[in-house]
Length: 220
Image 1 (spheres, helix red, strand yellow):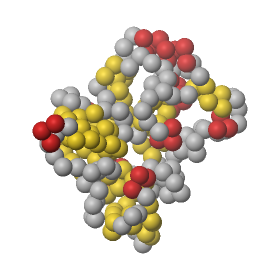
Image 2 (cartoon, one colour; image 1 turned 90 degrees about the horizontal axis):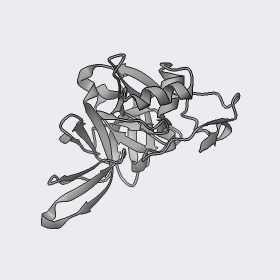
Image 3 (cartoon, helix red, strand yellow; image 1 turned 180 degrees about the vertical axis):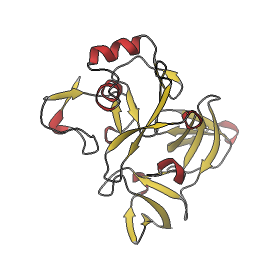
Image 4 (cartoon, helix red, strand yellow; image 1 turned 45 degrees about the vertical axis):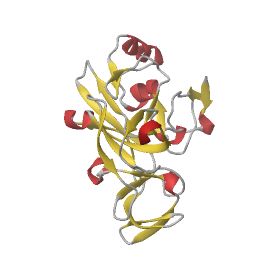
């Protein structure tokens, strides 16, 4: 299935004119903060010229997302997903610019296996254990008390959580939806909505539209 170019999210860094259709991604990520893998390879990293070339390198097992081989050209590559290209021995990740556009940046090997992930759901299991559902479709069972809209740091090699990032006063967040998409700042107060400060400006943002991250992760 394809998406009409005129309907692509404003975060996608492509003109709406030209070809009528673009590949539609499939996966857990919201369309506004993700891109189809073939589009990432062809139009952003430019390691292939055509979708057929993308299909070939994917079939060969050359592309890893979050330390897992992916062969689906429509796979949804989401914000902060870690991309590794075997043949190039290079790692990349998907970010948002200050103008709210998705971009690909090269990252070092240390960051390749360390990823922030937002908690979008949770439920209580037997023995008071908690199952958390993450923005990228991953699930973990933990003992730690957390809230929806907190984030975790995952070690993608061990598949374990190595840190918790709380949605709280003083924490750093990236705005992932709405008018201020792509802006980052510090939470200065929490009510029904958050007050996020960036420089001399303060933005009132819903909790669903922020992503708690370490400041170094989104350093521009």
